[in-house]
Length: 371
Image 1 (cartoon, rainbow, N blue to C red):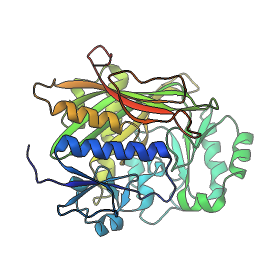
Image 2 (cartoon, rainbow, N blue to C red):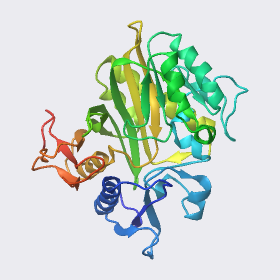
Image 3 (cartoon, helix red, strand yellow):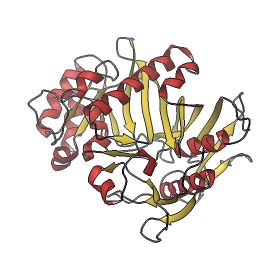
Image 4 (cartoon, helix red, strand yellow):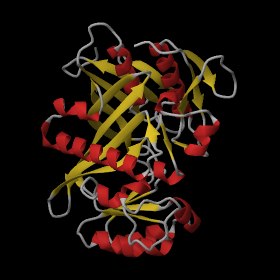
């Protein structure tokens, strides 16, 4: 498929400074995307101008007014997404308010929680510090523990397992009240023996790919569990095309939940659009031993699996490519970990003091080995 050439720029939009490994991954994705589609790479936006229309790879989901200033009109103009309000890009939209009359940001959709009821875990999003304890009590009454999550955190960070009311009170006392009022806080039923499934799709340069797979966790250098990568099966088409490769009841249910979530958000905020759509779906056992499955959060921006997505995009461009491909991405905190010879490394710094020391992605053969 031939389209007018573009110049690909990275866009640093976050209010929080990004780490070296995140910036390196962002630049790698932008460069590889440009190379795959026959476009130019223009570096960081603002440093260079291009005679052709720019294409952006932002580090955050954009808000509509930001996108308009950049000339971003549709999903064809960026690798990421555009939302009408900042909170729509965070975890808080996954769950309802504790009650309809509690505090919420302007633009909140009260109907979204009804549409998502069968696709998410029991939980609440809270914007009033005083409402944290009663909302948590309601979840603890279901049995077992709950999980308190900061809505902007990434990679499994910023979340805490809370086993009882006393622990909830202690943790809530450490939260900054103004931050809760501004950004909210998420309370969600905790599951044990859980697996996180990644469901998503990308739409780039007239191509459309979808993927389904499983995330991995590992300990960082302090022993804390963090995101360690994903193994994905990728097909041509959108989320509906994944029905053919979903393996087992858990993956089929994860796909069903992700599709409900994707459609419900589009209905709640018609101005929303995204070329990169990723949904983390958790399945596991509650305190009664009941199996549950639900979407944890959405990602309409560059993510941990994006290098693997771009490797798949490049592979599908090759003549004779299979109908389905397997790719993986890896993040390691182990200084002794070396990337396989066939891997494409997008960050490696054994002396890094924060975050992973090594990040790479690779195309797998059908048996899960590096191709």
